[in-house]
Length: 477
Image (cartoon, rainbow, N blue to C red; front, top):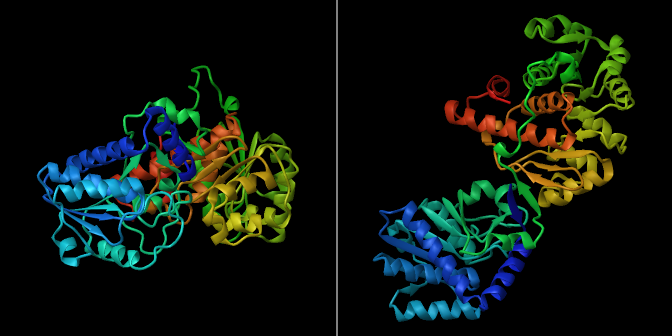
């Protein structure tokens, strides 16, 4: 699993590395600059003219030294310096490039337009506030120029703790991640702003990272695999999933969830919906066993897992189904309108998985969506504290938290922003839980499988074209 660290943790790791090297930071700065330049040469071998934006702090010091390596490689280099360096290391680095005769000037639009490559070394991972003038004017110009940009450790303007991109944050083509991956790369705006992320380990001992407990981990899909099925299996061994929802006008939601549950491998998939939907659902997917709410008590007793919410609505019918499902003492997956019911009548239960998107999370926490998004880690922990179980906070960098392990999904794409995508995820997770997988593991596997399948479809069909129902037909569990 890929460990993810906060800016504060990264700074502590940096300090420990300096101590182990007997270094004041100069050696690490040189290593960072050298690895960043080697990365730039590999990514843009034809680039001849480099425009390097430097800020007053240590990130700017990295930029000065990158300018040195670029000059030594025979490139035409111009350094854009708005204010003199303030940190001692940055001052030393600036002095070195002055001795090499590298031009250091104020911002020049013409120099920007003439460049083949822009190096962003304005601000690093410590920035947690909006860019003010003149910095925001420079970043605006860089974004408008649409030049290839390599960000050093962090695109200027991105909060690497939360992933929030302040106004006029640099749009990087690639980001050189020094020492470790930061949590903010994979939350909110991070993936859009960072571009492709490349780890520059600065030749440090990998064991150094394990000195600190990472804030979160981002597993690879290959790390999360279900147990192999036995040849002697039968359907009862893989559980009975009961999916509840699909009020009038919303049958499609429960249909998608039910199809996903079947494709997840549940032994039996049963559905409780409106009586008027029974024939249509059965004709659509004959493997489903569809009943109306008069059979609810019997079906709840027979189920090994219950998922409720897709297309549920908030009518009296919906409330009655929700209340009975919550009293069944079975593993539950709560989504969509069932989460809205829960927000009105909060309770704590250790055997459920809640799958809110940010707006649903805001209702559950009695907060605004902005408050949830400003600190998604804090929000998912607050949800767990209030409601228990396993929390899946959806969005860019979906978070999965069971009170111990914080998991981040680094897969997925903009094509997933379509109605029905959450219903498919609910059915997928329900199908995995029905087979006896532990709740946290099922949530992780479901989220990662959902997102990686979407990525595969984006490659083959394009982000605009694929549908939530396509995921069910294409994942391989």
